Figure 1 (tube, rainbow, N blue to C red):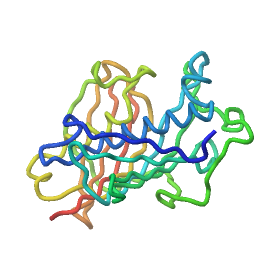
Figure 2: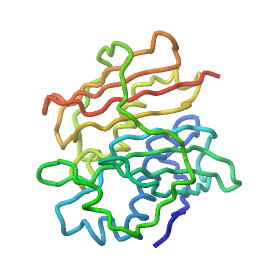
Figure 3: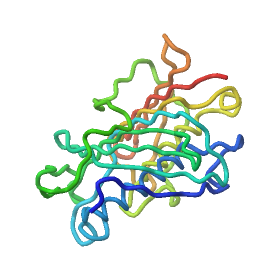
Figure 4: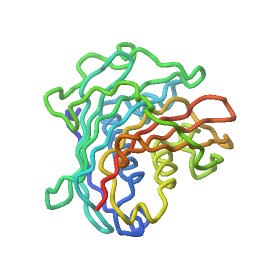
Length: 250
């Protein structure tokens, strides 16, 4: 069992945008892949433990801070480790570096283990055995992720139907796809003027194939670089996610 997991990825051309900058959703995909592989190494993952059970890991909250830019063919090294538990949440942090050691982004995340049938969370003490290595001394972001508060009005921005390409092995929309949906609401002219500085997201309820989502978007009145988002699932009549993005203009 490895206390800290490191894994390398080569950025594909399909993972960058029109400015040859890695898409934020691709960073989430890398973090998800590394977290899943580490969970398997700790015998708490889909392959060893959950494949034949009624339990699934789901990302609930995340904050990402962006420091550098990566492009096509860059080699990225993802470093991740569990930091322990916070109530029902398992906390896991990340650092992503380029091959030359430059820090691309850091993150802290909160995960739940859910019952597949009821979609209710399980106690971490019932899921994670004693002796699992944790690393409480190192931080991607040294911050506890409390529930995100929306601080502006959110007029409707876009309408989405969850499609085949959005669905993952747990048969609901993958967390990286929510990031893609949010980033799609930024039009090209805005993206040409700056870049993402930080992203904070709460994933509140699952979205299944065919569900209808309306995304609302608003600008924080005291800082026009800060945007809030909410995804409303009209099929289930539940909020799917809320998010806060901070944009830095060049």
